[in-house]
Length: 217
Image 1 (cartoon, one colour):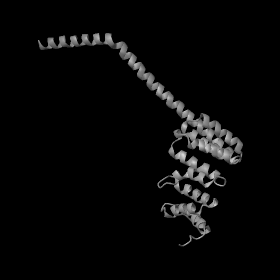
Image 2: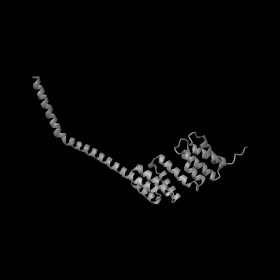
Image 3: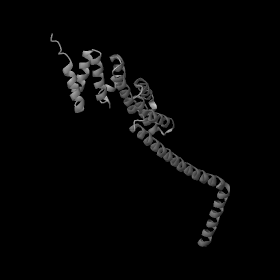
Image 4: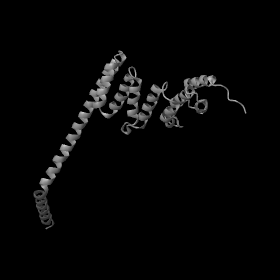
């Protein structure tokens, strides 16, 4: 008798499953199709992105070769084109390199290119800071100390990645613009930072020696 009940129960379950399948099979099949399509689409996207990155890498290397051959105009053009079409990582690098190539023909134009990168929040904080430093380096001989201070003072703050370079340029700018108080301020900041690179420290000491002694009251 128990075997008979088991067979009946099994038949009932099969009938219920059949009804469920007849009712919902179309949805199950559609779901499976969507899953397969999604996986295929993701794989395709990954392939295309990898291909774009490889192409961008090859184009970047060719542009670097042009630069190393002193073909700066051609290199600048190649980097500029790459900056417009490459994936985000190469795009930022290409913009920085295009500005560096432009510096050989027009430092002010190159500084403007760096300023544009520094103002672009999408490139990331450290890239922005680097662009600020490079723009300031191109303008160091011509800009006022007030301009350099506006550009570089945030980057000269403690723990800032490029604080050493920023402080050195601020000290040089102040000295060249005869603001000896500001020059001493930045030289003291260089001297008081235990992480100041040895070469920069030596240059700061040499500049300090050029300053007149502080008058004693």
